[in-house]
Length: 308
Image (tube, rainbow, N blue to C red; front, top):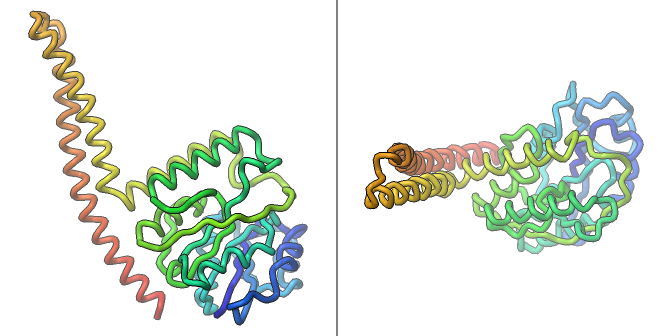
């Protein structure tokens, strides 16, 4: 069984050698371990330091972002014959010694994706607001996906070959939450295992501020919910419209029965618009569900092509 550890990097010359050197040299159940660095248009010596440390390097001509680097890594790792792929960060945030914890459930056929869960509550470098946001985000992703998710934003995770083959990344911001919702919708088993972290070497480059992180993560979750749970997504919207319209209709009827209906005709008009909107959204839910079936068929064809 072959394990490939992919490390997306952008200007990580100071830490990449440490990340690579900490990777376990052997793991029970694994015959071959290789390290793949995705150099995302770095302007420093990331590529040179990676090659010097014994890694295979795939480079982007310019900086394309984390999601694009993750996709490039999966494609390259699969072409290299990976049976299991581990993704970790080039800033040495995660403890590479815990890679064995990640791959063990896949080796034992207990999971298809394993997410390294940090101890968010006791993480000294996370502010209180960040701890709350991380926990809230993980709860929402768990609610939508139905998967065992304790740390949804964690980039330290392992994939079986089958799971990696069937992953399609649409978002340009990050892959973390998208892959969870997508993999769960496709029936893959997801498990969380506790992992350790190293002291931060630098601040995150993924987002400029907390507001941007919340906004973009929220958009990603909503988008994935609409794509992979379309019937449920549009049905919930339809129920909201119908409930609001029903409340306004009851309000109008109350005043109408008490002789004051003429002064509340606006409630009747708005109620009609909301109820009609609710029925239209339910029709959209049906069509979206039919489209999602077509998407699944296309993804099955793509997976067969990737395997060949």
